[in-house]
Amino acid sequence: MQNSDGPAPNSPAGPARSRGRPRAFDREAALAQAMRLFWTKGYEATSVADLTAAMGIGAPSLYAAFGCKEALYVEALGHYGQSYEGLVWAGFTAAPTAREAIAALLFDSAAALTGCRADIPHGCMVALAAVDGEAHPALCDRLRTARGTTLERLTARLARGVAEGELPAGLDGHSLARFIQTVQGGMSLLARDGVGRAELEAVAEVALQGVEARIRQACEAEAAPAGAAL
Amino acid sequence: MQNSDGPAPNSPAGPARSRGRPRAFDREAALAQAMRLFWTKGYEATSVADLTAAMGIGAPSLYAAFGCKEALYVEALGHYGQSYEGLVWAGFTAAPTAREAIAALLFDSAAALTGCRADIPHGCMVALAAVDGEAHPALCDRLRTARGTTLERLTARLARGVAEGELPAGLDGHSLARFIQTVQGGMSLLARDGVGRAELEAVAEVALQGVEARIRQACEAEAAPAGAAL
DNA sequence: GCCTTTATATATCGAACGATGCAGAATTCA
DNA sequence: TGAATTCTGCATCGTTCGATATATAAAGGC
Image (cartoon, rainbow over all chains, first blue to last red; front, top):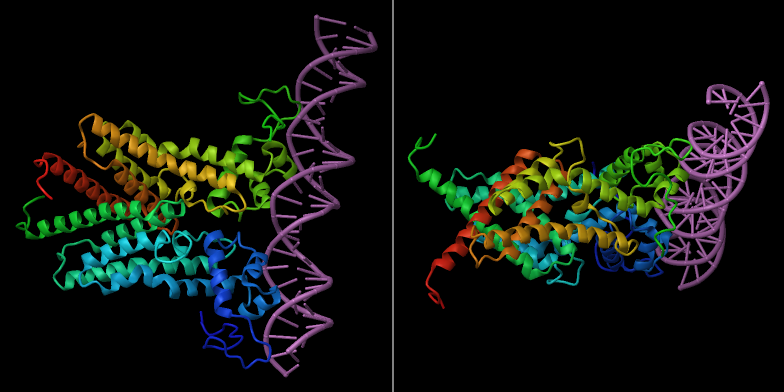
């Protein structure tokens, strides 16, 4: 599981280190094109011919630069995260309270997933990625891991909210995090089918009411005298 | 584009109208196998070699019986609906109130999508289907339509609840239906990643609290004197 | 009339089709 | 010398053709 075994074919950093005599093609731009193709068509449905056409290079150049189709997909995933993760998570990270963080996440998702923040395909590349687990277990694992980070961030933020006294101690943060994750994932499915930002924001509002109701319920359970019910 | 040019290989109805000389293979069982393969691997990633191996027939038999891979997928979708739609929608249809219908839908989904009701792959075949829209627009349209029926049923049921006096007239049924659709879709994504029934049921509980809060909000807005705010 | 034989029709499969898949060797160019 | 390209290899894709096998419907023998 070492990460340093990549091909590292040319300049490790920098936009266009033109030491090589013939100017190399724009690796970053090509990667962006590949990402877009994988995003819209999926891994299996995207052929190397599609990729080379979109990237403007020949197949050997692709293999020299990225190794193989699977490695290119992994790099495209990384590019996706670096380029667009902020659209969805910046507000979440910056929010002072857990409530506001969750609200920011859902509303920013409604905007980003419908292409309102940038000229990008609709829906999350990671959530909607459907690669055959039998044929490409490595990709499948990586995607599952990527999807798991959403849950981790949510549970961590809710736990912090509890620690800071914003949320009641009895709150079931895990279930709440799963709920948010579910709603955000469902948003990707709807966005892929063309549902717009306004409708997704309405969905976010209902979801936030559910979150608030669950928090209030936990507050009341905490405030109530112990052993009142049963 | 005539539809009557199909081979119409055997009996149009009835189990085994043995006018045809050799006994044909079990069409229903073969279709079930194909459905399962398409379900787990997706359309593009499932090859006819995979299909013939799982169905236990040769490729020419497949083409004689189903026409082509795309038509087989459409038939598999129909088989999916006939076989498993009831697992998710029976309780919804039978419920006396809209609230109970929605609760039944979400809890039955939590069970069915995690394979607790039958030995089936996890997640909804329709929701998770990712076929390339460029290469197969017909399949894409059919899937979008299938996904749309969920929304229609939900909006219709909520409208009925309003008509019967169960729900307030000012309720935004469309947004609420979109919310339920979102949660159910998100459940499929989680189920595909291995999340179990109990966790999905916890998600359903939070979602239902959101629904209830939204209904209560509409009730209060209705009961309040007109023009109170603003 | 009962049984056998023939004829027919269809389902099946092995083999192969052209097209396309991913990948690489040899080559050209700066 | 290093990078990109043309050309090619080999496998697999979805699909179809020809031949085989089989079970009924009709024809023939007693």
